[in-house]
Length: 171
Image (cartoon, rainbow, N blue to C red; front, side, top):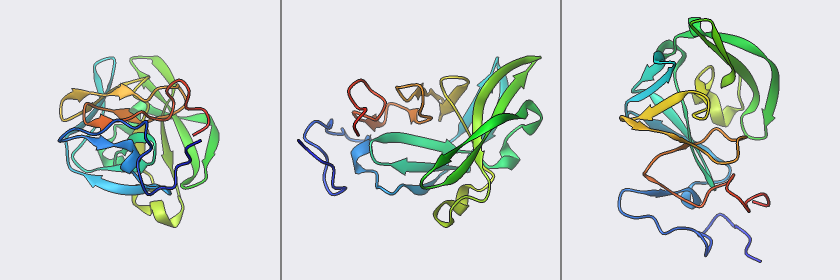
């Protein structure tokens, strides 16, 4: 059975075409990567966030997760949600409900406050689940990472397969 060592793509990985990134070329532990593309997040047609100062978190086998500076997020539309989770790399996540025109989308966003040293760059930044709100990268609508649990942003530039797809539970 193949075991990922972090040094090569597995034999089942899609070969990335020109302009694509393989999720198997991302490192473990994950890293941050500044991104100046236009990022837009909307709910019910209302802008929640818009920036050209995002930070991507790149981790082996997962599509990037985009984090948006708090100054570029309409925090009036966010309400702290109950519960937290813990990431072995980043630390404790805080969840946020999105409330637009009186309608609540539970835990549609999350953030890290006082993350581990490696992730200080995203301290207080927000990320959004593309399965729950509309997310765009340079005008391209993001597809949610498969599996329901993960928050990765899948765009046409991403080559997989990726964590969350059927049969990936052991990755």
